[in-house]
Length: 231
Image (tube, rainbow, N blue to C red; front, side, top):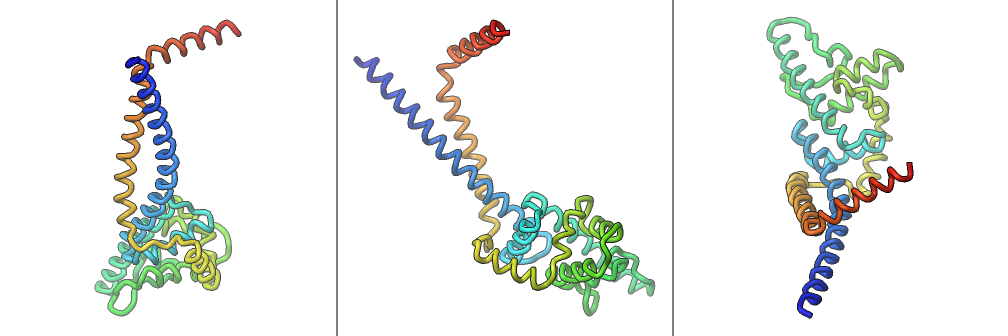
């Protein structure tokens, strides 16, 4: 009787563990999506110094025009690096009394104000959009996208073609969707917790299958024999 009771309890425990695993897996899927979003916002904030709310709105607009969270961060990070390098090149050129030859000067895009100080990234992006919209579609536009945003820069075409009114309309939609976050760091912390969750799920899998491995191996062997017999 005690063996039957122990078997029943073990079966119930395994069933509960499997159910918990299923719930955890579903939650992990939602959490992963949130982490990807938070990571993209965090990358943009770190690269540009923009607040998380502003970075969320930018990431949201990029998402709407077809640039997913995984691509948004690297594209903006690349732009920010190019802006920093160009601003320094412009300051050096001014000190040396020479004409600047950076990519932004090349396309007539203003990135600095009085004293050579950087404009805000919101202003810089707006200036890039204005320059982009003023150009005819073609290889020159594509060259501009790639030189500023990197090898995947052509993905920015639809975003750069947006008008100011379109940007404002999309921003309002993003606010309504609840996609604006104020603390992207907590999603970085959540990512670590998700890693722990995945390890826990592996532990559940090991627990469920551990004692049954010989039976599973035997089943696989029999299925192989059956498949061979069908052929």
